[in-house]
Image (cartoon, rainbow, N blue to C red; front, side, top):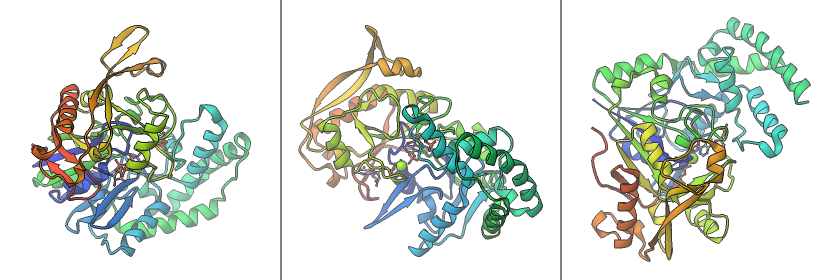
Length: 428
Ligand code: GDP
Ligand code: IMO
Ligand code: MG
């Protein structure tokens, strides 16, 4: 048996979609364990680009079983759209399963998410506006609607009656926003239930059965370590646990079942949304990285904030996730830079911090301490062997691996499947 968790090691958008797709060819099951359609995972196959938000990136392999587990929050309207998008492009959706315990994003969650961001104004988080925070609040508050509830007409009505009266009151009285009609919602969501019924099941049972048979299972993380509700840069985080521990609760598998944790690491740093970002480049160099790296949100189209690689962040991700190795992506984006900087530690009130400070007030005051590297002119996206990389690129990667204290097992030099080097084994 081999199981691997693919986890984002920075603030998301590290290239998890590409790495998941690449490993999926060896997997029997690919499982999403948290988050929702706030995620945007890009997979490039030949000349075609697929943007996935909810359906696991393993879907492009016809023999791989794909699972949306209980820790994920599902917007059925978005899911239907994504299924149609794939079907239109000739991708079959046959071995696909959705947990009956996954919580449902309702339209009032989306409205509440956006209304709360507008209310906070300057203090906003910069959410994707997809209803993620509000749906997880209902889950923890114990009055959420789950995918299984969409299959039970009477239960759904009962739940909506109790929930909607409160939501409408909040929407109207607190935010002055539109309210929702119970009959319309009931009819619409029962219809989704009917359409999705063939896929809704007990996915914890399904995944554990597969594990018992020695199948290869890949757990695909969304977002990243610094967006984790517990371990991220709170409050500028998402509302789930993208970190490796989230797999156990988000799928219903025991920690003893996880063999490897592969951290996906961008060769520089990006962030979407608000919050401190010590190595951010706000001038020309940041613009250069954004343009060359195509750093615009897959879900919202927002320009991503760009900056130098920060080793303290990835070292922290190694600790929190128990990373067994890392996949470094987008090295090619650095091609042609004259000088490249890497943050090794921070200066905070005259002291040197070598560990990432989780406290936001501290992080906001941290000044990065850099090592500077000479760049390289060569186009690395053509290279398929580590030995053939420019010497300066090797020096950069070796130092990155040393500072993070983790081996690099995959190196990605372009968005395509072929633009990848496997340097070491990444599955135990
Ligand atoms: P995810 O959310 O972690 O799956 O990442 P996104 O898909 O949001 O963003 C990563 C972007 O970088 C996508 O457009 C990918 O196609 C692209 N990408 C992935 N790996 C590489 C790489 O090694 N080089 C380049 N140039 N682009 C890459
Ligand atoms: P993938 O899986 C990058 C960010 C948002 C915002 C914060 C909270 O593609 O890496 P939310 O809508 O989740 O309440 O927003 O989290 N965010 C992401 N940033 N990549 C993502 O997903 C993200 N999903 C959420 O920008 O700062
Ligand atoms: Mg993304």
